[in-house]
Length: 403
Image 1 (cartoon, rainbow, N blue to C red):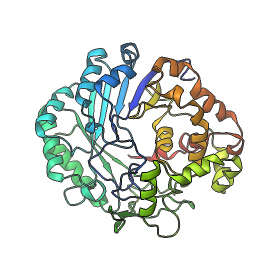
Image 2: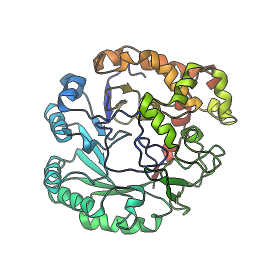
Image 3: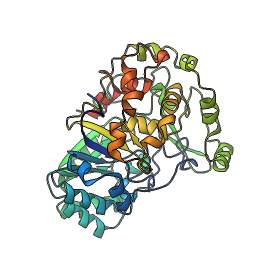
């Protein structure tokens, strides 16, 4: 199975890197503050760009489109409604799933969206992590009254709404109350998830400190301790936090922010990539041995709907959002360096502003970078660590949703 030989039927797309919220674990912010990363390109995909990126032929073969992304809320894209409607015209049977924090736009827009999402194959997911007294702890800047009024307008207009709830220590006592409220409001579904981002190098869960724009610590957020919501496993995703957390208390480096604004990139990343060597695999410690043993079963190639690709708001094509997130997030670890070094020579050939989607998929670039590496015996010899970490039978992905 490969992207080159079989059609892509699932498109995951990031419509915008803009966002109204300031969620502490989000990669668009610097060290859980409200400072947007200076190197992040703030942009959105327009209807005109969308039509250029994806031909009618390509769209007609899709079974599902997920509007989510990793750096922003898709509702921030000015043409989001027109894009969804355009897909409906080209491929009315395509399932369209839209994720949002719900705190953007006015009720009149949400009534319009509700009518558009009244069909069974349309689903809008509201990310609501608590009730009035807790949702803002993680979904910073989202105003509860506006969110609830928007959801109400959407549902009353016929929209198919799902409430998705991230369970933390500060809101785990409200899960059932939130579920009851979702039923009362007319949500068609309610699901709860375990947040990632609390793991550290030894696999132990640690709290995350939350900062303001001046670098002042405001509070901490903790993973839930309740077994009914906790997987009970200390999952190691150590590389995700190498650049933003360690065993000691960390701070927001405002001087680095000023430097990045001037340079347009994080100097430490450029320095690491300029001298990248596979001997750096030792940075992973014993985790390297664990990854070596992982048998990879690519989620992107084994979706129920078929093959998947991820496209970010700049028009860059990746095999999945996990690779895309790590490439775009500017983290500093061996895993992130390996992705960047492997993909950098192919940047132009994966750019929809330069190359069309059909040629990108037929080029065999994903197979060259990723698929070929899966048969290699170790990370040190070229096996892609991000794939071993994300797509194995014990993957943290399999533990995200709480049954």
